Length: 604
Image (cartoon, rainbow, N blue to C red):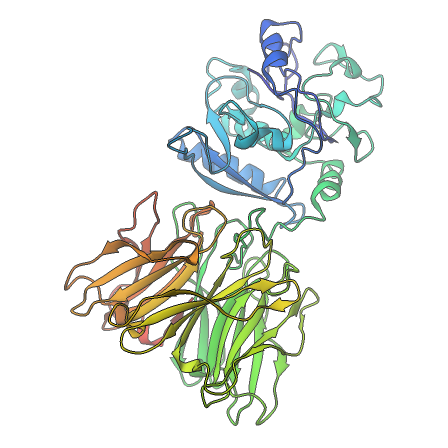
């Protein structure tokens, strides 16, 4: 079966790249010879019944590799996509995942993205845009790429070299995946003779048709058979860039199409979430360090900010990561204590490769806000695509309130608004441990808060503060352990989507004493937890572990990073990779002796 591909001049069947016609409702074959048997197969096997828009509902599109191996060539493909479609400008579209494809055991359907198969055949996509999604196919491969060109079109390597053949063709096929058809298929294609093909351009119609024209006819489009240079040598034309902005510019590539998949900790917008730390150098000197995510997980740390001595008191900062300006890249906020019940919010906005100098966004003034009585958390609490801060505030006498600070795209923040208050005698703020996520299906971007509450006597309960379009709802009980069953003080919670179903799960690293720890999962935040790992006595010191969670290796499934204190200024990060790769921790980074003090680190 054949889909959209490209041909090259002189009779050598190099794949021809598609164009800026969108929303195909008809799938034609992509073989160069439209009368060939292969083309006939394509015309009968392509999903002719698909109707409507083929543009993805979000600028974040997940892909996976159906074929294992080929690490170098796969990296070339990712680089080509990064340098073309993902760069117009950064954040308009983003391809994430890039992991091996996974299947449902009961149906065999691929569940973690548009599959990419590698074989020595003509590269192509099955259709345009969402026609390639596994849910819409009765066949596996959304895309086929060629990494060898031994049997199919070996002249490509002779003419251009293997790397350019792979990258230029991949850039074209990802254009099809975005929904763009071949440019020469358009009705306004001029009477242009193409010597390399010995054909008139308008007679070279091939592949899927489109029905929405976004730009003027563009000979240099990466999607045009008739371009002056083959496939425009893998480069986007100005028309390609304008077309992409028209099709996807109004979509938020900083947020996945599935609820609960916000890239709140992705510093550079590459689809891999990152981990951060505030480090105390003493003398009121503080640094911000970043462990960047990659296809192999977290990479060694690099310094993104270093204050001058006397400028930042590490012990006075409560750090938070989120997209506080809605540009699809993670920023860092610090809820900062000036003393005398005087608090502030500072934000380090991401540049994509680091941070701007911190900006003061809110200042309470003396005697107006106690930092010591505040527990801040992050989430999109108003559904506008920008990360906000919610703060549980302790008024004393077991009276707790919840405030929200709504951040705006113009890099401002609204004054705090009280969303809930318990009243005296009803809720002890010092007995709560909150996490945030999407615990209710169908909420879109709205973030919920789950609070674990200590009733004493090893009795723990959980309460859901549901995100609502008009604010944050009052707490509703979700779970109660009963006396003697769960020690709140022995629990460290972290939340993320660990199974990729679009809803947030909660993990708890539980301390049994004697350096014996276990990992428990509250799937989707509901019901009794299940134990997925236990260290055994003498193997894991839970009090010396700080947790962070994110899609550090891309894809839809988050991992847990445990920052571990070995003592003697020696630290490490261990990764709990999740239900597919296994929950047993894997060493990710090691500082070396006397190189990194865990007690001076706030890991998040």
